[in-house]
Amino acid sequence: MKKTLNIDAKLLKEAKEASGAGTDTETVRKGLEALVRHAAYQRLATFRGMESHAQDVPRRREEPTSKRRPKRTAA
Image 1 (cartoon, rainbow, N blue to C red):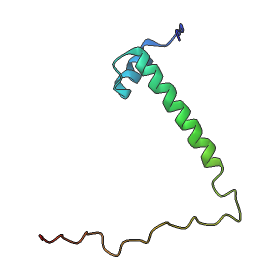
Image 2 (spheres, rainbow, N blue to C red):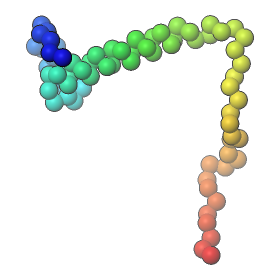
Image 3 (cartoon, one colour):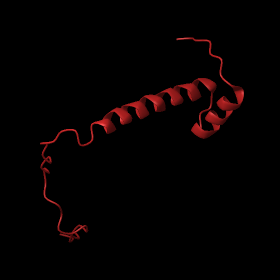
């Protein structure tokens, strides 16, 4: 979809450098995606601690006793 936008040239340049985007279109797309992710994070953060009788979700597997894997022996 094509849109005509009035964006400050200095701000666009800074955003392009910060995002590593190659084009103005990619810069705007990355900025909008970041804004949407941030808003979703903020909404989730408001729920922290709201469920007073929520229980921890049990883990599916046990914690490993050792972080190292046993070495395989040649057969």
